[in-house]
Image (cartoon, rainbow, N blue to C red; front, side):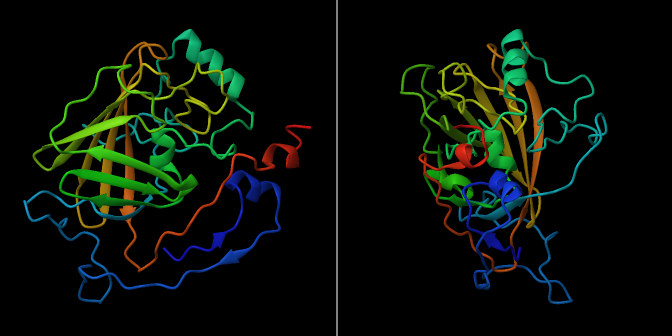
Length: 280
């Protein structure tokens, strides 16, 4: 991975201000990385498995930078999403309801993205953020730690059922339960904090501002197709914001060079809006 880490509030500030502090963490070789004849990591090797035979999703993952033109997704696969616009792979765009159209118009060009406000990102923003995330697959739960804004998400795999909508308090990351279907971890989530709370940073699916509401049911299908590749098909079912459910694809690649995640400190009393002239 060999990233240079920049001490800033958010990626948006990097574009606005050139003065920053950078540092590189030391590499620490990871055990269990398959090697090819050339001694380099063999990312096409089979995915590792846990003691019970399930694919092991554990590891540090980066989103790929690959893009697709609209309508060119491989046969049988949903369009590839991007951080800036999850609907970029659809020729016809997303199936907005008027509420979603109004929110996108209001948000475009604004600096109210939750990332800029030091708030938790939406579920697809976290999957697609250019900063890494670490998956920790445990016997009763899977935990995803996102470097961006230090997001932490818990997926319960202990057999519990998804609670009814409105039963628990709304969660920034939703309430998530997972089950295995063959080699695919299927995760269903609901009870999200979403748009309509009155807070501008709530309910963002991407950098463009495509919204989700408290009616969202999110279904993710995690497949580690090889040692080095993780595919996540994400279905958005939000009848308040969209006329029908739709599915997009996320592609991530393993970090095998020994890089580790670093701390990301972002506070809600940051001065981003004032520094950029958004707020007086």
